[in-house]
Length: 312
Image (cartoon, rainbow, N blue to C red; front, top):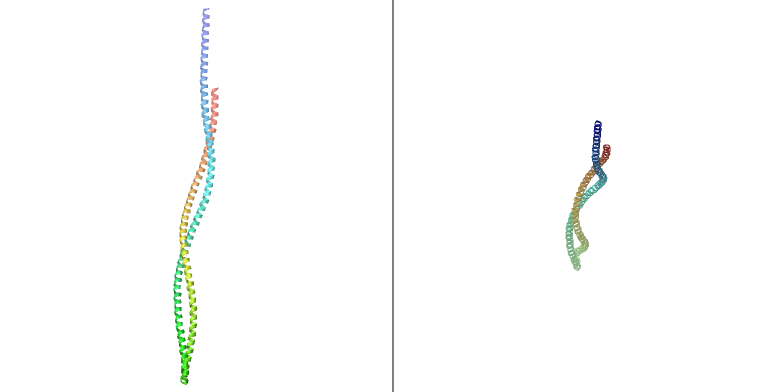
C-alpha cells in the first residue's frame, strides 16, 4: 500500500509540474503576444502617421506643382505676347527714329535753303539800293539836261528875236540889206527849228523824268519788300534752326527709346525662356509627386499586409 501511495503522489506532482509549466508557457506566450501586438499597434500607428504625412506632402507638392505648371504656362503665354508686342513697339519706335532722323535732315536742308535764300535776298536788296542810286543819278542827269534844254530854248528865243530885228533893219536898208535879210531869215528859221527841237527834247526829258521817278519809287518799294523778306527769312531760318535742334533731340530720344525697346525684347525673351524652363521643371516635380503618392500607397499596402501576417 505504501509503495502504491508513493507512486500516486509522484504522478500527481509530475502532473502539477507539467500543468504549472504549461501555464507558465502559456502565460509567457500571452505576454509575448501582448508585447508583439502592442509593438505592432505602435508600429502601425507610427507607420500610418508617417505614410499620411508623406501622402499629404506628396499631395501638396502635386497641387503646388500643378499650380506652378499652370502659372508657368500662363506666364509663358503672357511673355510671348509681351515679346510680340515689344517687337511691334520696337519696330514702330525704330520707324519713328528713322522718320525723325529724316525729318531732322529735311529741316536742316530747309534751313540751309532758307539761309541761301536770305543771302540772295540780301544781295538783291544791295543791288536794288545800287540800282536806286543809279536811277537817282539818271534823274539828276535828266534834270540837268532839262536845265540845258531850257537854256537852249532861251538862246533860240533870243536868236529868233535878233533875227527879227535883223530882218527889220535889212528892210530899212533896202537893196543893200537884201543879202543880210536872207541870212537873218535863215537864222530865224534855224532858231525856230532849234526851239522846236528843244521843246521836243524837253518833252522827252519830262517823260524820262516821270519814268525815272516811277522807277525810283518802284525800286524803293522793291527794296523795302526785299528788306521785309530778308527779315522774314532770317526769322524763319532762326526758327528752323531751333526746330532742327529740337528735332535732333527728339531723334536722339527716339533712338534711345528704340534701344530700350530692344533691351525689353531681350529681357522678355529671357523671361519667356525662364517660364518655359519653370513649366518643364513643374512638370517634372508633378511627375515626381505623383510617383511619391503611388509609392506611398504601395508602401501602405505592403505595411498593412506585413502587419496582418505578423499579427497572425
